[in-house]
Length: 445
Image (cartoon, rainbow, N blue to C red; front, side, top):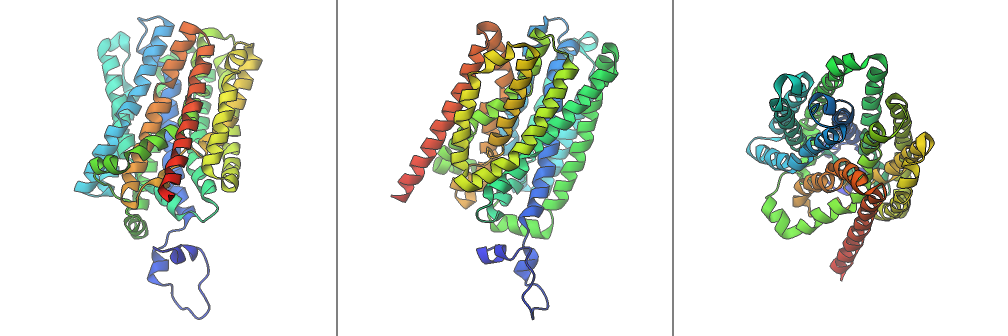
């Protein structure tokens, strides 16, 4: 597909033309691609946050009742990280399936694995019934979720970036990221409702299981919708024309492996902040704050709304000054924000609420442009696999261990250690963006 074809998408045919050309019939509008991306991301993030919130409110009591509350939280966060550790493996296994069969088979396998893993969590007995076998089963189910999410990569985000109109790439990049605040908003609202409507015994007995059944249903519907989308003739043709198919991983890392790591580290500040305003503060609350869980979840819901409103602003800013400049500016802002973490979290309900609301706004602005900021660096034949692995490693390096590390550091050394942790993420982002700029300048010489 050439640029002339893309420019005609959504435009009326010239007078005197009775039928559309084959190229015009096969063209896919960026807005249509964005629908598929948003559907996939929203379901993924809902599942992600259901597990994250349960790691604080449920799992320490159900799977680690034999441990102190703090130890139970730390172990829950360790299991939370498992999905991100195995996600690159899931991506590679999914790529192998796609090479052997096709994209549809890969997505179908991912669908069933994700559904089975989520359902297993929803029906698992606790430690008091199964002992350590319950913890092992939870860990295996979490690994299954991570493998499935890696295998569910469909190439639509890359196709959206390629087909986005010139001068609006920041706006279209932001659309897929809207799934994050949407997923958190639904997950937090569901838990807030169940927490406020049920007594503790009922909530820990059966109430917490309902969000996992909801996640299962939503993921099945979303993955089937994506499957039907990417298997249509128009999408298959677009994906093939842009070489959005698996490549040899060894060749990718030999030729452009540096781009994978630059892309992952370029988003580090945003991905670290991701968990530090969602999951970590909830754990800090249950250990140290007198504010009620229901009230705190309500504040986080408002924060998610603010993040959702901030993301379109990030698209407008990025299209004006560039995505990399936007990420760099926001990394500096996140670094400044990190200096206020101890002050705000130790200042009672008011300070904690300010931390959440400001943090979510920064998250919306930065995370709106965090995905695929340097994906265009990849050669076309490497872009599909390179974009997937870049995303996987960004989650692994930036978000996977953030709640575990932040909680552990705050207990051992105080909240200033959390400041140092987030500040280091901002510095790494700036270094990665600078390195990327230097490499691009070198390529021009």
